[in-house]
Image (cartoon, rainbow, N blue to C red; front, top):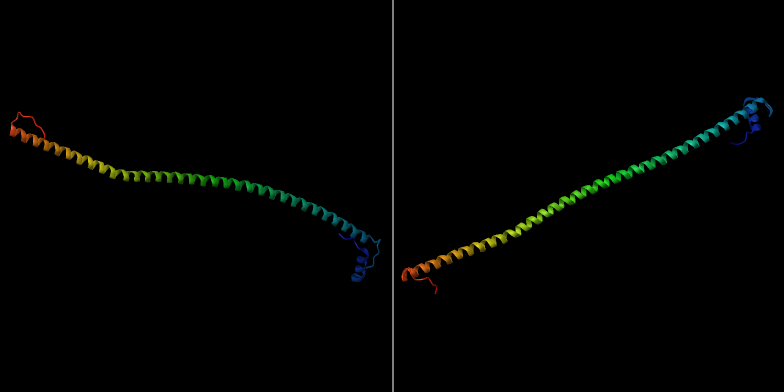
Length: 154
């Protein structure tokens, strides 16, 4: 604070209120004492405000650290959930892909089975017909030659 200008105060009192005082008047001492007390109270108030500001900044820093830890923890949990969901999606996609591969494999095997089954049946029919023809041929020769002759082809 600026120094107390007692001369200006005495002049202002004289001008406004027509009160005459000098520098040694006890009222000026009371004003000076009030000023000193006010300066002391202001200094204490400023110190208290500075302490409160420092405490507030320290609290804000602690809150920032705590919020950072909580945010990091939430991010880790969210990342773990995303990983688990991705793993489940990949597993289910793998199962679906394996099933599709199985279906494609079965689709490719079916014509081959049908083809081999058809070849087998045709071969069986051909063998049966060949046996019947041979039997008819042999039976016809036996009747003609008698039952004692052996059946020969040719």
